[in-house]
Length: 152
Image 1 (cartoon, rainbow, N blue to C red):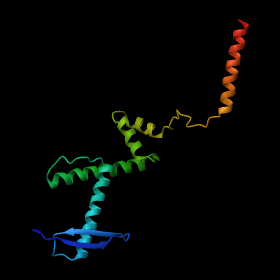
Image 2: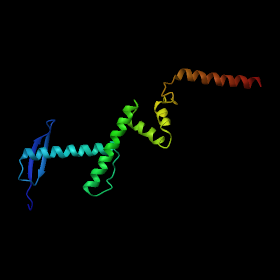
Image 3: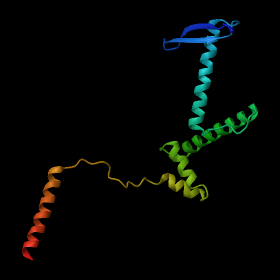
Image 4: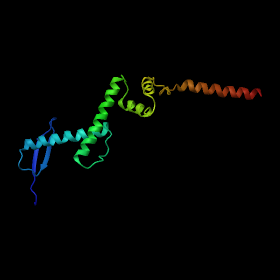
């Protein structure tokens, strides 16, 4: 084998076996396992940022540009949460943002009115069918048509 590697076996926080393959022979096995756990926390953090802060792509290539984009997204997210809490809005943050986007060029009072507007229920929801009653109603309808045809 041209490159030598090291196999490290450790347990995660749930007690599951974690196998790590590395070419680092200088650090202790525990230290490499800790580095892996920290790296995983970073991965989860970026997943959370992508889901909640709408970062799909980084526009800059430098570390400073990426940091600035993350900071702007986090600040925006925090400001939206604070605005939602300040206005006492009980809906989801997604709905809050949708209302904000819809009212962005309107006066602020319109936005507040839209937040406080009760949702109009256009659907009566899924209902159970009473098939016997429906069948009886259809039978009555056709009996009525037959009677009308007999009269004419």
